Length: 487
Image 1 (cartoon, rainbow, N blue to C red):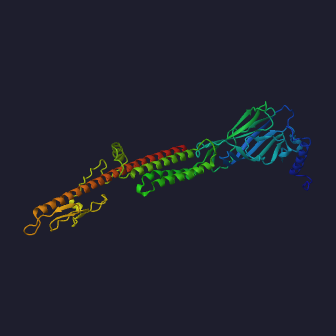
Image 2 (tube, helix red, strand yellow; image 1 turned 45 degrees about the horizontal axis):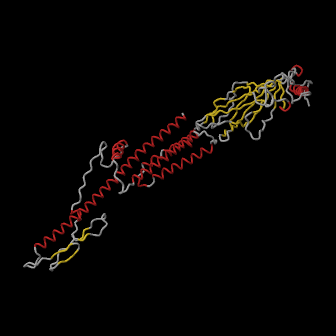
Image 3 (tube, rainbow, N blue to C red; image 1 turned 135 degrees about the horizontal axis):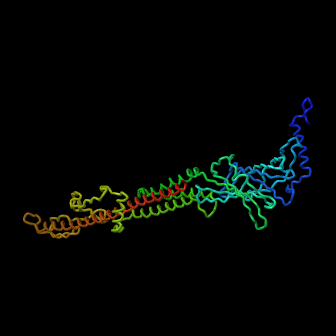
């Protein structure tokens, strides 16, 4: 119902509404949205395309799909939808559902949506000269070739190619309004930084058709924000990798040298699995994956070297003496380079050790009052030695211990003669000398074994220090390399 003022005049808005209804009836009385709106079938209809990037919803690196929110504007001239403004009281534009008019069949060529869902059906704006403007919001899933060689410091280029599906270049031509997509209303993404989205028009000849097909390709340049991956993947890996060389610093008696290396190796394996789950299965190994592999290789080598050094440290008495070249190379040069010194050694040289003297008979005897039994020590593994007792006063021969005694005839005073006393003293002295020589030999053998074992342990200690600094430098250089890629 048309309302009016008291004087009988109608307002302009009511008149425009009535005229818009009349205009729509006049325009679409003999109009068909199925045919191209041109006066001559040889005419080319020009469509202007403009893309506005609103948001990057998701970047699926594993499936290589980019999900983005776009505003697509298409502008063309419909020869059958023009009117004279004077006949309709200056009415300039009308807005009607887009299904009423002919629309260009422009689609996203590299669409990766499994349902291939269409965009939202919105109204079109028709101007008096026949220009039709169609603004359409759309959530698109496009295929994007992801190169993860420098992950997490990588940059990606995703292409969005728009073109007509059925109209060739002789029927419909495409033009881009701007040289790039509009980014003024872009919502920042937490993972990706948009560097630009330039546009390029191409004319493609396909094998199925002889006529060229125009398309416009928008190239989205993305750079990954690596802060999340630095703090959650790189820094923990670096800290764990610096623990591996410390296995050389642990004492061999602790029994945890190999366990530390294996534990670090297992921890890095867990991080490697986390990275592998998010990366696409391709031949391009990501940079962080290369870093993990290199670090795990070094830790494996350090664990193997630790086992070798522990074998040297635990060389027993049956080990051969340290070779001359090992003594010169390891104990002389490497010990100074790695600042490994024993107690009592100077920094610039080694003090000669005091020569040990073999024990005296008094020290061997241990101050025992009973000289008839002598313990040769635990090294001999024999029973206590039996020394001969003084001969009894009775005449005759007696066998005690290992000596045979001849009793001399009693003197005038009933005491043993001088000859008997001298024979007994000489036997005791001879046996004591033999036992002292045996004990001294055992002592020198023990000292030689201890010295040989000590030299091998010092070689192991020097090698531990050398490999600790070597692997520290390797881990440090590897960390600098990965940080340099970030910068």
